Amino acid sequence: MFPSCGATFDFQVGETLHVTTIAQTPADDPKAACRSSEVRIDSPQRFSAVATANPTIGFVNNPVLFSDNVVNAGSCSGHRLFSVVPLGGFPGAPGGPTPGQVPPLVAVRSATLFAPDAGACGDGFPAPGVCADQFVVRVSRE
Image 1 (cartoon, rainbow, N blue to C red):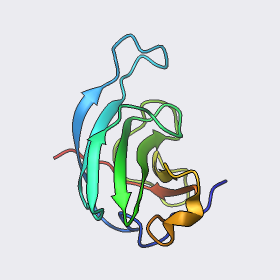
Image 2: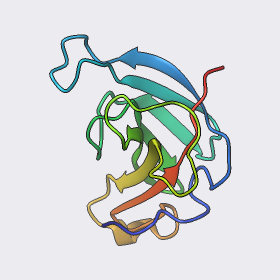
Image 3: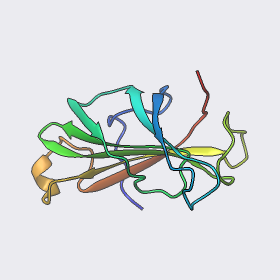
Image 4: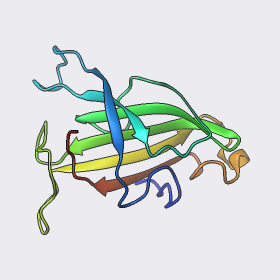
């Protein structure tokens, strides 16, 4: 649906992401009986600056984890949106995927530019306008 953000944008395939829960959706959220958690991505961080988190859910419905950060990459600013989405129903099962079966959780990473003219960013942002990638993930608590 959107072009890839590319192999060099933010985190990469095979990396371990560390996140910290910083908020949860209200208990009376009409989406589901379960609550989503807003997270801060602690590592890896590859941007020149990351501003205060914006408590929005971004591109996907019913994430169990989500973050929306204002980022600066080169001369451009935009959003980095990150969500972990259950494929087998909310809230999804933590743990690893089973080969040959639909994974229980998928991470969706995307970016959008603030600039009205995406071409002005050059190589500073991963794709003109909007990009998105999906990853099969294993979730664990530390």
